[in-house]
Length: 88
Image: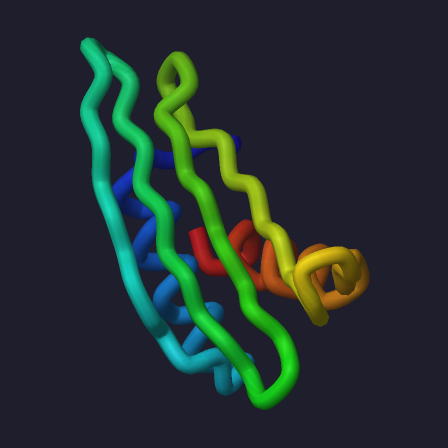
């Protein structure tokens, strides 16, 4: 995805607001030239984790939406990712 980690992170925060996802814990790591940021959020019955990693001149974004420890909501994850991409 073209765009920086900062742009992807800001787009993630906007997507969370637009989709009524409550923003939770966030973290940031640097390993050499690779930057990784993670933002967690939740709805009434889903936990969402967005991981953004610098990749070449852009950012790689991964979204996981969980209903429970062993059940995922791929449709919600795809919706969040599409909203992030649209916001960049």
